[in-house]
Amino acid sequence: MDHFTLLVWHALLVAVFFAFLWRSDARGRKALFLKTFLIMVVGAVVLGWLMFPFP
Image 1: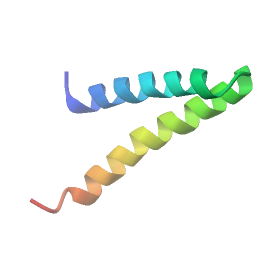
Image 2 (image 1 turned 30 degrees about the vertical axis):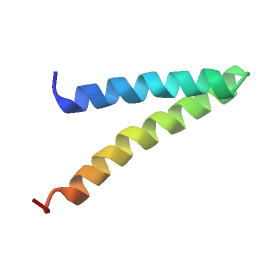
Image 3 (image 1 turned 120 degrees about the vertical axis):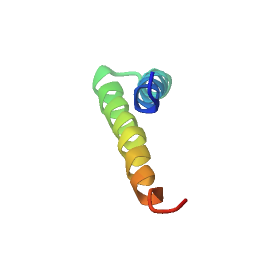
């Protein structure tokens, strides 16, 4: 597997865990899952691009 696939799997599992841990209603779980998942995946990609020019 490549790093991006592992990153997405990790973000998915962590987002599901936190959504079920911190929210009790279905709507809140979906919102927290989506927000957490996107922040982790998009944030990692953006940070990777920002660090790309540095050795």
